[in-house]
Amino acid sequence: MSTDQQVELTKLEAEFTQELQGEGSLAPKVGNTYVGFDIHAEDIESIFFDGIGVPRWASIEIEDLDEHNAAYMERYNAALAKFPLIGRANDTMVKANYSRAEIAGLLTECNTLIESSTDEKAARAAKKLLIAAMKAQESNAPLTLSPRM
Image (cartoon, rainbow, N blue to C red):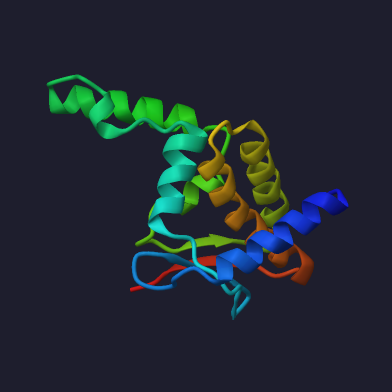
């Protein structure tokens, strides 16, 4: 990572720590230590819909519910095939755990998403996950995204 990228992430992390924290968000923890910022529902939505390209439920125009579900899941799974680790963080009401062995893969997925995204909000939101994963790698510790309730 270049010095410019490190400086950008340091500035973003400072911005992220100034955002509101609380219910409806995921609280990233490296080991048992809170990283200092939350990943909000809007961040998750942006990562998945605008960054990865997961389809929105209403975008599938099939009247039969079973066929609609099948078509949605087919498109959902196809979109997430490149991002299985990020895919675990698809809900702010469900805990996502990443072992120490999975952190390198999570970093790769985050970088791939950031580099390929044409959506600025999605790339910014993915950088929250990237920073948390970088902290886990630096500490050689697992990363947990815990729902705030």
